[in-house]
Length: 480
Picture 1 (cartoon, one colour):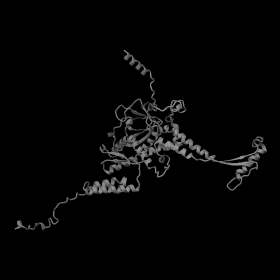
Picture 2 (cartoon, rainbow, N blue to C red):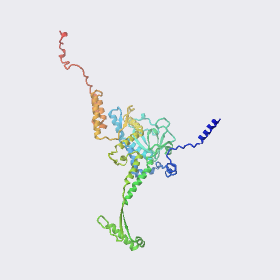
Picture 3 (cartoon, one colour):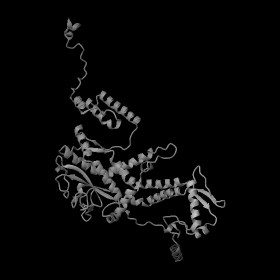
Picture 4 (tube, rainbow, N blue to C red):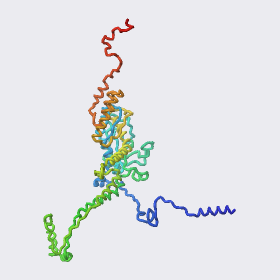
């Protein structure tokens, strides 16, 4: 019984002991350090600044701020300026036709415009234009005949209204997105039309969680909203530095009894004004400053040390917010010993490739399919694909090294009998985009190589076979 009472008392002590409180951040209540310790930092918070919903404000910023213009335009231009490398077993003439159609129909310009307005406004669509088809019906690529595909047209989020109450119910990449887009009467084209989702390439600025996307009528976030406070800080600092230039060199004159002169006015004030007008006219690099013996003339100069560091810090914050290096965003050469900015540009280009793959690949695949059916006809081959061309431009030395390596490899494969002459010429011509040589290999050269008869296989037949010398009686025992 005594042992049982002892265990009960120990259990009560354990329950009465205070339990330690675990927190996720550092706090020192006595020193008022950390969040929640009644200091200035504890009163900091984040408020909603819905710049994305203010179309006019975004447009003023795009027109009036070169930084906003660069932030919107840089990525859009870089995502579309290099184009694609079409990979297929199609004849070279067909590949050239497809590539020319991309340029003739201004497909890249349309995609660039769509990316720009999706970044500025938070969303935009590119409508696929197929002559003779109702845009409200689902797209069926097999129904596209020769000459029907006419390109794309961009419509931003302020001229189309997504039907958020009607969503795509089929499983796939568009599952849950709006099934239709209603074009407003204020739109430049397709006024009053309802466009099916399969006929558009939808792009968003910055993806939002579900409820925030609902608040934005199914669209994303403008890239300007996240960097708005940093942009204001940078422009304020820049304008402040510009204002200091006007006060970089101040001149002051101490005038005896100035208050009495101004108070009395009349001839005394006129004489004072005339004196300073004479000082302004005569004062120059070779002139003199004439003042009364009791007056005092002084100059004051400002120094701007440290201002460039402050501006650079704000510029780096903008660069980080946009994930665009300084050399691309500001056109500024990197500072520091042996700094070239090459690593920054390569990292930026890697990010561009990631955005191309995630945002453009599906749409370009659809456009490639439609162009083939419209310009060549029939179903495209299964191996019709593409890769995005690299934005990184190689130096002449790097191109020469690649050209030598590719040429040697192709020649060795041909000499070893692994490939025939026609295949070797095709490989050399295909490397012209990278190496810069072998671009003059024509389709006729390839066709002529394919028409050449295959070489005779090497045998052990004597060189004098068929000349009559081989008909002589053999000497030896069998010839007796």
